[in-house]
Image (cartoon, rainbow, N blue to C red; front, side, top):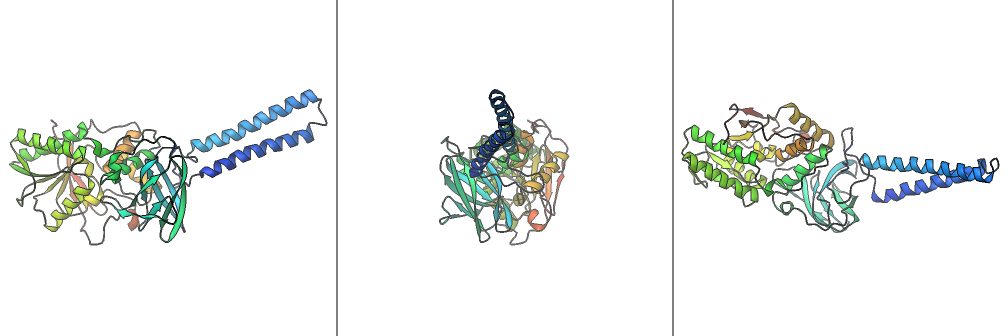
Length: 409
């Protein structure tokens, strides 16, 4: 898959679909020029047979050279693949604004714009206003795109521009999770894979199912709490396939360990959160403000996101990778260089890691504690990039291991 990413700190602007015609016209013009030159230079000096052979050879060389140029443009990501997720930058006023289109197929698409107060649509005069979504600093818009080439209009900061897109001819429906609250997490995984220049863009959204690695991490968390002497835990989930499976996993592990696992009821006990970004953001906010009583908050592994960590709710999270290891640091650097404003996430990092042919599933689980900087009203979904620094898992805070490798079940 071609990836529309520059090499010098910003996303490349792709060659528009109409520019392909310009390249073809260049080829035709080049052939015509060669033919004219051949007539002038060769026609007078060579016998007819040798002239025709020489002209044909010259035309072949010129055609091959020009076609190689077009092929190289495709390989470098200048021509986007039809029907593949699109990550690009669009000039809006004096800014280059990141735009993500997932899945870039006919029908419903989720569009993320790296600017506030953005809108998008297929009609320049009737754009749909975007909205902030939990766990993300981008503006999100649902847009129905037609099959084949079209223009996606985007507005932000008082300026409007068009992105040439090609959804291909396959009318396969988008992942259902893109339409709901888990859409931004799904899109974050796509960004991670695209950043790795990999061909393996995730075919499913993270919330579509519970991985065995994450199930083991949840069982490990419950066993840790039982070993600490807890007799009861609170549990918050959602109705996504992953949330339902995760809640069942936690309840089964709690039963084996002799713990009860029920919804929050005002009792001061550990709170285990296995919802997606939207549900988790609401929970950590309520714990922070005192609306929900909890001894501490144990987040599922997929909830490693700055928007879910900066609140003071005693977050702890089981991870198979140190957030400061070299690979994670490389992922953060890729975000800073290529997708300004994008916050790091567990989904993005794991997709980036997998696209590079690696996995963390076999690594041991450790429990990490979050020491967040004080949360100030109005911070919303702001990222570290917006405050003038590189992206970080938790700007101004710490994520530190509180256990060694934990035994898994």
